[in-house]
Structure formats: structure tokens, C-alpha cells
Picture 1: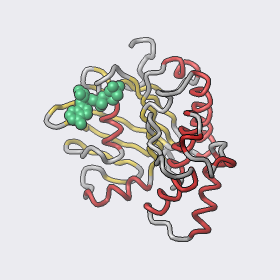
Picture 2: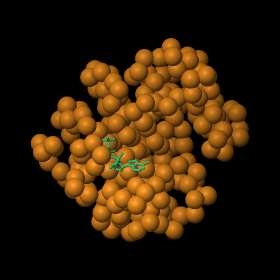
Picture 3: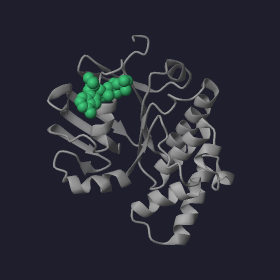
Picture 4: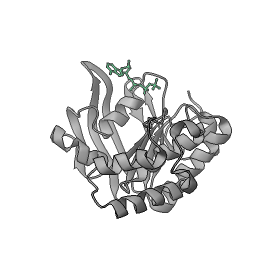
Length: 229
Ligand SMILES: Nc1ncnc2c1ncn2[C@@H]1O[C@H](COP(=O)(O)OP(=O)(O)OP(=O)(O)O)[C@@H](O)[C@H]1O
């Protein structure tokens, strides 16, 4: 049976009083990889924010990783966040501590108590992103690509069924973007993690084809042709 990791039905998304996207119908299944494209300001980030609980769902119905966004108490947002990973363009690592401590900060904040299990998990996610030997490095000692890998490792800490990535290759050179794409596709394929990735990078999409969804004139268009920009 197909498992919907995301299921939005007739959702209207607002920024303040402005309707940014209307009548959004969007489903993503287990392990699926989906690109989210669209001109700047058309609502890609707003759609992602709705799915990770940063924007409240006021109209329509939606479930993400089993959480009902419509009826969700704000207090439940941290629980939603524990069940999905978010990756940003600008990495957002804590600059005053090393990689291990960046990851430890997140596992502690999400309720882990057992130090040994925490250490094992940190080694596990660093291994998954190819950075097992870099745990003691400070963020400034890492390249942009390595910092993005740490950000992805952080997103993997709670073994999520879904990763939402907002332009994860936006700050990277083409070769490093390529490595990050290979890593994201590997995570999706081999761990069954659904990934929704907002991007402007058509070179990446052409090289790593997948279902593409576009925000345009207040709508979300599924299976969009990537040739129309
Ligand atoms: N915090 C906010 N308050 C008010 N309006 C906002 C806010 N954030 C975004 N908007 C508006 O909502 C609309 C959609 O913005 P959004 O950031 O979702 O677009 P986007 O497609 O992700 O753009 P980009 O490709 O530049 O990241 C834009 O008109 C933007 O100005």
C-alpha cells in the first residue's frame, strides 16, 4: 500500500493577509524525491514552511508525517519537527562549537537522554554523509559542501521519513552541488526518506531527474515541465 508522507488537500497558504498559494493539492509518498521550482516570490518557501509548521495551516486540510496540520496545537510543532528534517541554503550551524556538539545540541533539544546512544547516533549520521572523521572540526574549518553535509546529518538525526530542503545547493559550486545531490538521492533511495527540495538550479534537475512541481501564479502545478521557466 502507498504511504502518503505529505497529503495536502485544498490548502490556501497566506503570508500575513496575502494569499500566496491557493487550492494546493500535493501528495508525496514514502521515499519519493520531488523538486519544487518556480520563480522567486511564488511561494516555494511558504509551502515548505507550511509543511514544517512555521506557517499555520488556516484553510484546507493537510497531514505531514502523520501530523494533522489543520488541527495541530502550536505546542505540537516541536513533535512534528522531530519527525522530519529541514535543510537550508545557508547551513545554519552554530559557529561556536564543533560538528559533534552541533549535532549533540539538536539530539539533546529533541529529548534524547542517553549519552552513549547520542554518541552512536552522531557517528552514524556523520558516517551517512561521509564526514565520520570531521566531528571535531569547527564549522569555519569546513568547506561549504562539508557544512551542507553537516546540515544534512543534522536533518537525519531523528531518522525522519521526510526531509524538506530549501535550495540546499544554492550556495555551492557545481561540483559540490553534484556531491550533495548524489547524497540526497542516496538518502531517498536507500533509506526510503521522502525529499522535497526547492531549487532554482535547472542544471541539477536535468542531471538528476525527478518529479517536478512548480509554483506559478498562486497555484501549485504538479509534474511540471522543467523547460518552462
Ligand atoms: N515573512 C513574510 N511576511 C510577509 N510576506 C512574506 C514573508 N515571507 C514571504 N513573504 C511573501 O510571500 C510571497 C512568497 O514568498 P516565498 O518566500 O514563499 O517565495 P519563494 O518562491 O520561496 O521565493 P524565493 O525563490 O525567492 O525563495 C512573496 O510575495 C513574499 O514577499
